[in-house]
Length: 112
Image (cartoon, rainbow, N blue to C red; front, side, top):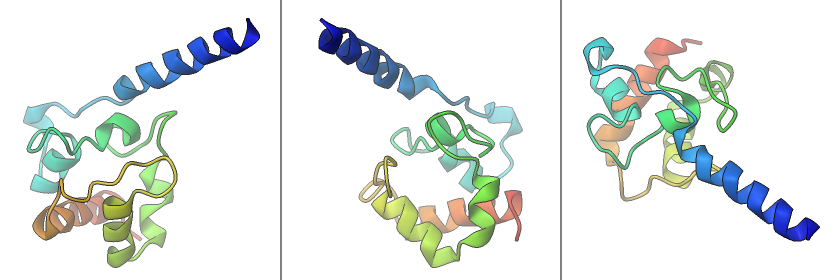
């Protein structure tokens, strides 16, 4: 019985995970990278779900203000493409121009 309850609890946690973050309203988006990050350009690119639309993080994903300043642009690109840890890979969902736009927005939002 304990296994069933644990399994249901895990399913509820993971099931609710898709709605952890909040998108930035379309009229408040200031760059193409921010639009991508918020799923406004490509719905499959939904970084906001775990990192919040402003990148400040949720219980699902870290606050990027603590990560981005310590990463190089190639490391950011690798993170987006490979998805370390529990982060999903966005390989095939973004191209080089998309990664460049997201990286530029992240650099503006969270400078070194």
